[in-house]
Amino acid sequence: MRTNVLYLLVLSFFLVFNQQLFAAEKPVPTDPFVVVLDAGHGGKDPGNVGNGYREKDIALSIVLKVGKELERRGIKVVYTRNTDVFIPLMERGQIANDAEADLFVSVHCNSHSSQASGTETFVLGLNRNETNFEVAKRENSVIYMEEDYKVTYNGFDPNSPESFIGMTLMQEEYLNQSILLADLIQKKFTNDLQRKNRGVKEGALIVLHQTYMPSVLVEVGFLTNDSEGAFLNSVAGQNKMANAIVDGILGYGNQINLSAIESINQSHPKVPKSASGVSIDGKPADYYEGIIFSVQLAAGAKKLETKSYNFKGLNDVFRKKEGKLYKYYLGETSSYLDIQKVHQKAINKGYRNSYIVAFKNGEKITVNEALKTNLN
Image 1 (cartoon, rainbow, N blue to C red):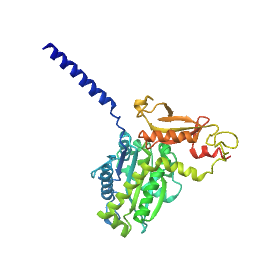
Image 2: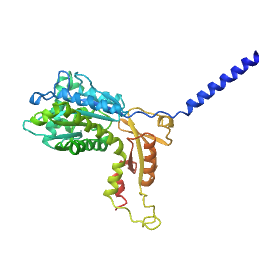
Image 3: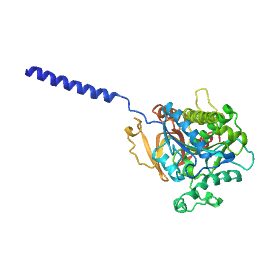
Image 4: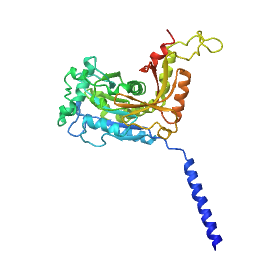
C-alpha cells in the first residue's frame, strides 16, 4: 500500500513538473496591434448636413465597417463611439491614449459652399493656408458644445489663427508615420476608387493634438456635392470607402519600416566603394562618422524597466526621457547596415511600428540628415 502511495506521489510530481515545463516553453504572446477608430461628431452634434445627409451617421457607419473588417484580420479595435452619442474632443484622444493604441483614425465628411469634391487626409501641423485653416476651424468648432471648453482647452479659440500658433505639437514625434498612413489611405481612395485626390494636408486639429501615436483625420468626401453626397450616403459607397481605409491601415502595417529605407536609398547615391567594400577614405562604406543610429521601439508616459520581459525578450533596450514621454530604444551603432539588422530583429519580435532614428552629438536628427553626412 505504501509503495502504491509513494508511486502515485512521484507520478503526480512529474506530471505537475512537466506541465509547468511545457507552459514555460510556450511562446510569450505578442501585444495585439491596436487601432482606435473615431467617428466624427455624434449625439447633439450632427456635423455637416449637406444635401440633407448627416455627417455623424455616415462617419459612424463607415467606422463600424472598418472596425468589423480589421477585427476579422486579427487587429484589436477600440471605438471612441459606436452609437449616436456626443464625445468631447479631449476624451476621444484620451480613449486612444488609455488603449495604448498603435494608430488613431478619425473619419469625417467635408462640406463647402460650392460643388467641391474629393477626399483629403489630415495630419497634425500648423496651418499655413486659408483652406486648411477653414477645415480645422470647422472640425474644432465642436468644442463650443462642451461645458467649460475654455478651461479644458486652455483658452483655445478655433476662430483665432493665433491659437493655432500656440499649440504644442505633441504629435511631432509621430509625424512621419502619420503622413505615411495618410498617404496610403489617399492612394487607396484615388487609385482603387477613382475618387478625386485633394492630398495629404496639415491641420491644427484638436482631436489629433490629444493623441500620443500616429494619427490621421480622414475627410471621405463632400456631402454638399450632389453626386458625392449621394455616394457617401449609400451602403455601397460606405462599403467602398471603409474597405479603402482598411487597406490603407493594413498597408501601413506592412510598409512603415520598408518605405523609409527604400525612399532614402533612392534619394541618396551610394558612397563610393573600393572592391573590398570599403569607402574611399578607408572606413566601412556604411559607417557614419559622429552619428549614432538606434531603433525606437515605443514611446509613452509610463516609465518601464528596460528588462527583456518588458520588451518581448529583447535585450540591451535603453530609455530616454524626452519632453513628457519616455522613449525606448534598441541598439547603438554608427553602421547603417547594422542598424537595419537590429531593426529587422525588432520587427521579428513584433515591433511592427518600430523605426530607425539618428543622433548627432546627443541630439536627435532625422535619418535623412544623418545619411547626408557621408555625401558631403
